[in-house]
Length: 129
Ligand SMILES: [Fe+2]
Ligand SMILES: [Fe+2]
Image: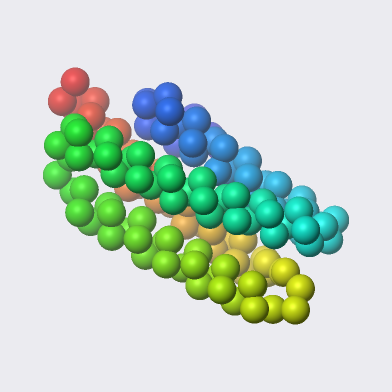
């Protein structure tokens, strides 16, 4: 769930975070209603959107000269690799399914990442403004 504590103060990146969180809520909904087609298309939309968001964020961190950009990029890459593992597992399954464990992992990772790593570049940007 989005909270104002997550705001990084850059409208485009905050909008991305809000949309990513909303997309995960949709996934829970499609799971609850067993709408597998919607689940599959929403999951791949979420992965695409998240990867595009990471690229925008990485560009922004480089622009402001954020010192811990390399570490941050590694975290993005590790999460993207994990998403790709989920995609390949699910694409090979007979019917598309996402477990609670996977969804909970994604929520936990994203909440934690926004509240710590993303807020870290936000604090740096505010200091240097
Ligand atoms: Fe990030
Ligand atoms: Fe982010």
